[in-house]
Length: 204
Image 1 (spheres, one colour):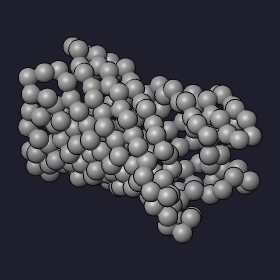
Image 2 (cartoon, rainbow, N blue to C red; image 1 turned 90 degrees about the vertical axis):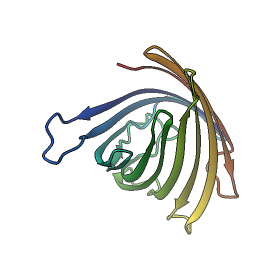
Image 3 (cartoon, helix red, strand yellow; image 1 turned 180 degrees about the vertical axis):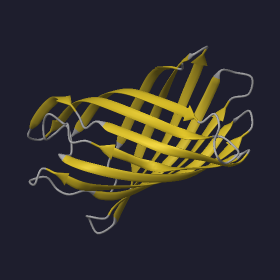
Image 4 (tube, rainbow, N blue to C red; image 1 turned 30 degrees about the horizontal axis):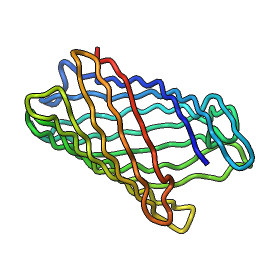
């Protein structure tokens, strides 16, 4: 089995100019439209996958520390059973974030995914991910690296847990950038074996 996924993504940071509590407050939003080519033993399909949207509230508690919390939602828009889950899924998330001046940041995101509606013939979903992630800018150069790991615990499968780890290398050029990432799954309950991801993006 394999997937090729092309994601059109928009991320946005919205800060309040005059928050009631001193310090920066705002929202981080994300909107994904995926186009998927999926191969399974029973055939290959191509089309729209499940659209994902997310809004996280930002709370800066200290100059170098923040707490982020909110939720995502995945819509069952897949045009074929191989391209999506068939379920409306809610995904609350929270993360403490530590900023490293002039160099990057580190956070640990905890996110729980559970289905609340959708096709009756498709299995319900409920799984938890825990993701520690470090972003590090290389000193004096327009490059950065990212190191991350993730556990995924499937509550619908006797709490079996899979693991993966990733390494990303990126480069900025004025207001444009690109990165490439390799992810490797580990353990008998891993949800993937190997993924290669890349992106080209623009900062406004």
